[in-house]
Length: 304
Image (tube, rainbow, N blue to C red):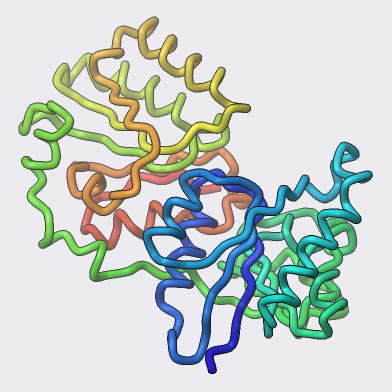
């Protein structure tokens, strides 16, 4: 019988962490392992789980260190523990640092192993605050992320496993660039610069729009496609970007594509992919960057 792995992913906004989780789960050996997911709400993430026929449970998990979730925490934990018991889970896998406190309590209660995926660098004090000592294994997505644990007495728990790319999905021979551009009503010969990532000030969309205004002086037909989900919290930032494009005279040159599940197809339309993150070393691992490379696209990225 396949062993059940419970993946905890509290935040539901689509991004690199969730894309990596989906790729991991759909490539598990189905004869040996059965993935289950606990997440906080219905949305695009659960839509993707349904497509893959992965079972999930909705338990609204507040961010662990936020005061508003303190009173409800015992009830949340009881729901999580009850679900894990009911499903006879053999392993807890927290998909991010922020999920680990919940996972550690479930694992301790059921006396089963705990794995935590670390996808960003962080300050040393978070090792204690998010109870990382309770994890049996800590998976870091890059050498830079692993350096956050330098000097930690449990450093031997840390393993580096780089994010992978589905090379069958990200296969440039599967797409015709001109046809993809046509879907977005883009001229086939207009240079297209693309940026994929959540719409957030740290991801550098503003810098790309400002660069487009400069490039337009030499290449009037330049097009920029901004691909990524916008949270309710950052909807004002999206409006700011649109206003900035208007003020700079490039509103007709910039396409706000929103969230897209067909990233491989979208990327195939790019002439250049950009990754202008302002998070620097805190980025951890830029999934959209390696996906663009898999699609054989020139990549321009920040280096700090």
